[in-house]
Image 1 (cartoon, one colour):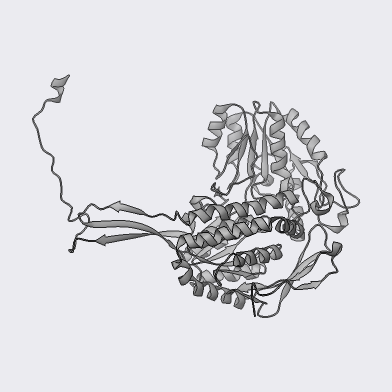
Image 2 (cartoon, one colour):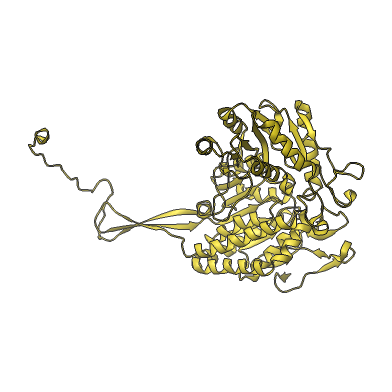
Length: 542
């Protein structure tokens, strides 16, 4: 085997369109490049151009995951005992390397999952911001000193690493989200086994190599490629074997619940960032042009493939007709295409053929519910394409924007997430009805309201059951120093990002240091202070 930094990238062929290379990809286990133990592989394909094969990667077996866990456990003692500021310095190096190579990484992300260059740049910048934020947190991994109730006794608390963390993330934010997870994990002294998204293995491989280039010791982060149903499951199974001390997962609610069950029965911590049916309420006092921009981006940015994308658009009945006229004008003029080739587009292809198939299957429930399809014709083809579509539909997997109206809260399409470019529209009688509708789905990730009535804004942010709320802003968006996560069906209450995520990757260790030279027992040896009685008539003072 070859060390991760000892060799150049191996190009399998140069037959791809536009001369783009097809790369031989590897697992990275204990700092070494390795194939799958049984030789099985899979390929990564550009969803905007199916003839563009980015690379061939190991389809990791249970033995490969086991080897990665062995490497993580072996690396844990030295890494966790390294001073936190030194760990922070390595993380800072990662951020600087990402900045130096940002343009190339951005183009790679767009090529592999089809996001626009602008959105990919945002994803990579989020990874950079995370590194720079946690570089300094390495000098602020604070504990506390606490006064004892007994003399000559010192009490203190320290943060301790959990151990080996299993990291499983979706492919829609393949740079930002794994850094949200792994950077605080390793800053706290943990080691990781990272199962890359099946649809973004080349970007994950590139990011892992950058981490090692930054000075990360071998075995601290171990990368295994493969399918969620096999390789990812092997990592979750290792919780039952007592070999994983933490699972951090981003993905569907159904899979998250299954992971939560495994972790729960083993008393192992898990962070679950799951789906959303994010509501956006538009009130009559809102700046409608601004609100239309927010709803349009929330619903169709990233082709609706965000956990924070707009689900239910809730319109007050007094502005319904005016707002819908403005919104539909924008939707009908949506520019769709390959950002690498077509320039400024709102969104590109679906993340992969699998996501496309799932989307087409999911929107069938809108028709089954009796919702009115106002716009959208499924997959874009050469025979059926909106006027704003650019390029050759046969080369990739693109979808029309979809709009469904006459939706009510008893419909499945109101309650369930649609992961793709589709919004469901509901009419509200008044603010109370709008807030009720916003809380009616089983999810609680993101939410938003457009209003210029400050009391309405206050009542919405106070009454909404969600982890995040935008006021006169879209349902999407996050910053590296703000907590990210949801409630209800959108997560188990843990948070990504900011100082709050440290709670997810460390535990509190309380130390009781007895300096008196004798046994002192709290609650039992504490001297009681008796109150002194005085014959004072306090009433006489008034």
